[in-house]
Image (cartoon, rainbow, N blue to C red; front, side, top):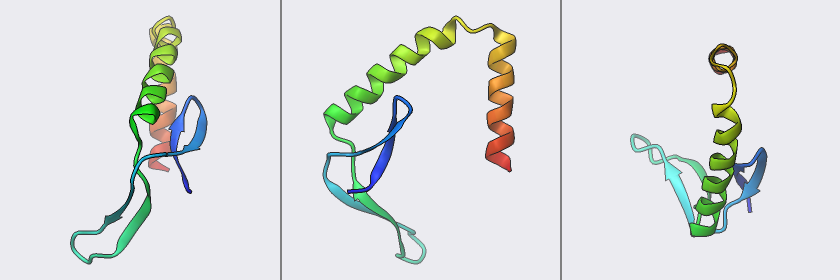
Amino acid sequence: MTKSLFINGLWVSAKGEEFESADPTTGDVLWSGNAANMADVDAAFRAARTAFEAWSLTPMEKRIEIVMKYKELALA
């Protein structure tokens, strides 16, 4: 099983139904694996909620710095 979910800083395997994602123009399979099930979604939600508590206490200037660094890395 592929590790396709990033939850609480870790790549984990989804436990839902198997599925494939295909390019609609060619039909080529781009990705195959398992979907998230309700337990996976719940774990992701709880991790995000916990992370938000710390994030919301981070000063605005630091948040901007982090988001801009993410943008830089994403566009590289």
